Length: 220
Image 1 (cartoon, rainbow, N blue to C red):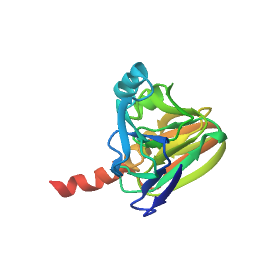
Image 2: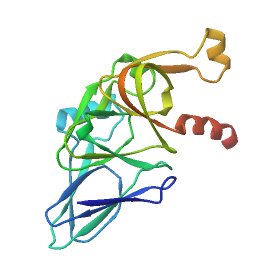
Image 3: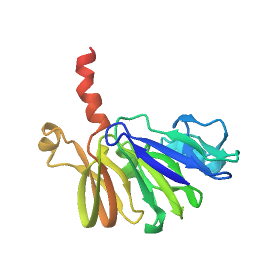
Image 4: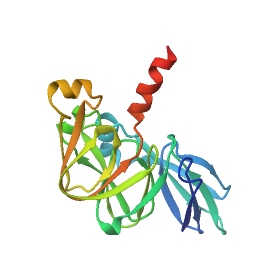
């Protein structure tokens, strides 16, 4: 399997070329186009009950699509995300990874899709009770609004709620006010996410909620 991410960083698309018999799994609605020799099969994302939990409590899609090359020559499927922004990949050889709702785009064979309890702090932040978690081997492709910032944290680190995209499972979250009561209400920051632990985090350079807040007064 070969892949190429084109039109980076603002309008990224993932081009996946499948050899005969190869397959790739993608989020529902991620496909832009595909060659005629590819067969698409829809299934529950990670199984029936995990899919229900992700849909009800995590804001994820109920289904994923599996694209398999049934021809005798290479075939290409093009995948993308609904947001304007970049697409990156994570190799699961580095360890498991958790994603915020809406970040996942696709994964290769060997990657195991599951769920992880995120805690009530995540729920209060509007990010759901469960997170999408990938373990095993293979690669996972994910998207963001804007560009991706990768950091390795050790100890405590403060992040605005809407900028966190993915993180190592060993990192915990705690929602708190950005400052005192008056400062939190007047600074425009409100609640922030205090991360604690050691490992990787991935941040997006733009905020969807920030964009919504910017456009709302202009649409009246």
